[in-house]
Length: 81
Image (cartoon, rainbow, N blue to C red):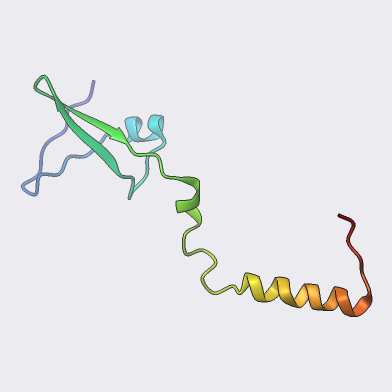
C-alpha cells in the first residue's frame, strides 16, 4: 500500500511502482468513478488509430502511390488480379 496526498489543485501522484506495473505514462487518460465511498481510477486504452493520428500529416501518401503507379505503367509492369 502507498500513501499519497491531494494537492491544492486537486491532483494526486500515482506512485512510480504502480505507474510502472500498469504501464501508464504522462498524458495517460483515466476514467474516474465514485463507488461506495471509493475513488476508482482506470486507465483509458487508446484506439490504435489514435496512436497514428497526425503522424503522417507532412507525407503525401496518395501522391506517392500515384507516382509509383505512373512509373510502373511507363515500364509496362502488370499486376495479377
